[in-house]
Length: 260
Image 1 (tube, helix red, strand yellow):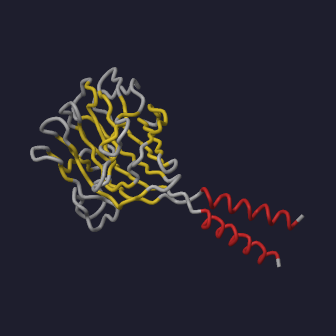
Image 2 (tube, one colour; image 1 turned 120 degrees about the horizontal axis):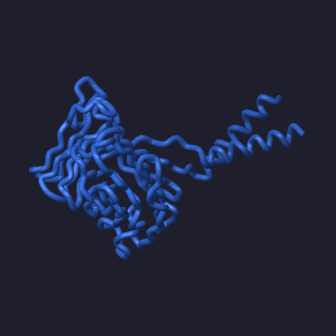
Image 3 (cartoon, rainbow, N blue to C red; image 1 turned 90 degrees about the vertical axis):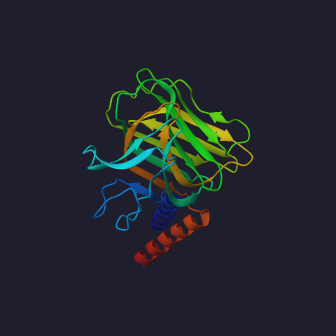
């Protein structure tokens, strides 16, 4: 009975090791950490990024707001299709790996309905990537993932028609996950304020983008200004089978040693 219990415990350890790994933080910027927080890569804030504007005329500044924290990034575009841009440690997704992003955002004035008014992009500086754009304003009904130079077949993929209703100047929490399924498939999910508004969708391409190291957050078809805070990008890797087996064997050895 003890022998069977030992084998069961070891098997449980191996199964746990194959699925449970700590997420790696690639970017974490609250714009508050350090002696003198800035939009640059602060030396006393190890996980922040250096933020720049995509175009001359677009303003990206450090703004004291108090909600949800003391400092935020203020974004004010001069026209459409402008972004606040930062880079983070490069991550290449293996099968089963995922990239998660979350941030807080609020309009500085009540947004009007505009298709694709808000957009964020995850991409690689040397290749294509993927964008998510959505409408803001009362009764907004447009939300879709879009291939941004990384797809050769379908350029747009997602669920068009989800209701976002991003109105007023209250804070909203955005989250998204990109997961690599196999050699040619990725899945995408998107959430707003804790509720997924877009079902997981799958894109297939002969040469998809699996490497990411840059983030754009900005406007699209409107000149909407906003505040940005608590930007977090993490990488979740699935351990190799050999690593999981070694962890399981290590657990078995420890159990057997304790039973002697």
